[in-house]
Length: 382
Length: 214
Image (cartoon, rainbow over all chains, first blue to last red; front, top):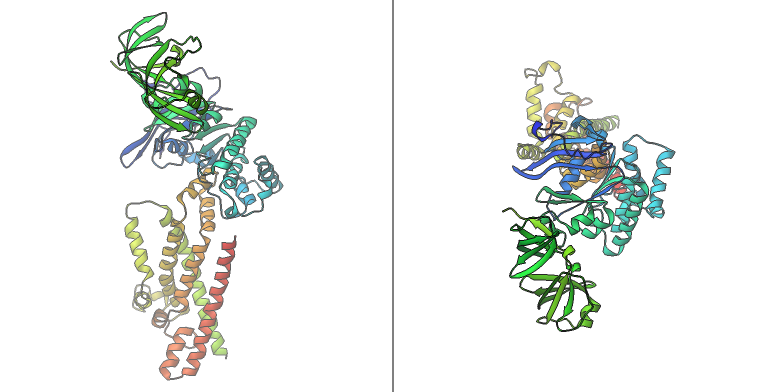
């Protein structure tokens, strides 16, 4: 483990965004190498007090590795870790770990009772006696599992076990909670309620938290910020709405569910409204980019409205109307995802009820409508 | 009768002390072996596994050569003493306890160690809880270690000399009685040896099964 390396002089201070106080936990110039290959390289990542950062990304992107690096639990990590602005050297690793509460994807409960499991972290910190019982019972109650306190950990359902695992971290009242896919081992029935309860507890305790997930719904619900890691790199770190509506690059766009990604060229810009040529069609979008620039037009499926061609519809302010035929219809839960070949391929989400009422079918001619403000442009290298 | 009691108690004491020393050596080393990643780990594991199959007479011969009056440790005057038997039995039992401990701890989910550390456990607290989680395997290792020395005869004979009232243990006494044709006494001693092994392993098994129930 190599930590506490000074920043290169040329790089200067990291993120001087006028913070009045240092982040609770921050990592700089993180580099994790396995088998001669860099699996994670992040210049700066931080979590402030009272915020929940949802770290998202595809499987194998390095999300969990980041979480372990924040706990100084990876042998082969380079970089600088700071707790409240103070550098944490490897010698202080135990001190750091006693300021955090780590929850892994699998509950990893100890072979003892629920109460003993939740008390374990407190005992590690030398807390004894009545204080342990009081705090354990308090957090078991807040997680709705007080009645399970004398049960053996091996007798619990997946949902109950993960609640114990969460109680075991919350009871420590740590500076930072680090949650690694905390709902992935829980069955669907218990999952939604557990997410609700975790969201509530994070809000009530105002505790700094980093939660790793590959589920965008979970990330949007829990995160006040969303960090996207792809191929071991932090590609975007913004509020969730910005990440979803204005992804930084194509990989992020693809990950956050932007299904329509069209290559085009800006033909003209007038009053901030750009006209983009895409596969022989013209798309309008808000842009600050100059004419002639190659761009990728990103459009979320829920921002596209469909109307059967030839049928009258309500007047709309949408700037973009493209006509094409339906090439694919896929049912996705309460939605139907419709792919329309308008020249460019446009993907739209419509409710199942609308799809039924409109009688949508493959081969049918439809008009896809979307606002210029719904199109996010990513400028490409010339 | 006094002889019988003395032989039985000596057997129990020698095997108990040897097993305890082997546990003190084998458990920490087994833990290190299970939790560490180093280049020659495979070689070390092979050596330990070979040690688990070490014939007691070979261990006895090695210790006898060391402790023999003209040997490197001859000045200690330990040959033909209970201490010599204990030393030989430690050599026999340590690889057994070490190897089985390493295997037991190695079978634990590696994420358990991460989780313990992530909850703020120090190195020693982590190891203590890993031992606790692997306690069934560790008790099995202890039983195997005790079993390997309580039933051992070759090394005890070689370095203890089977001296009446001094280094005669149950196994060497049985060999002597069979050699004399005194099968009655030999059978009696064998019964005691079996009972002793049964009681000790019974207690350890009870502890192990209690652990399983939690």
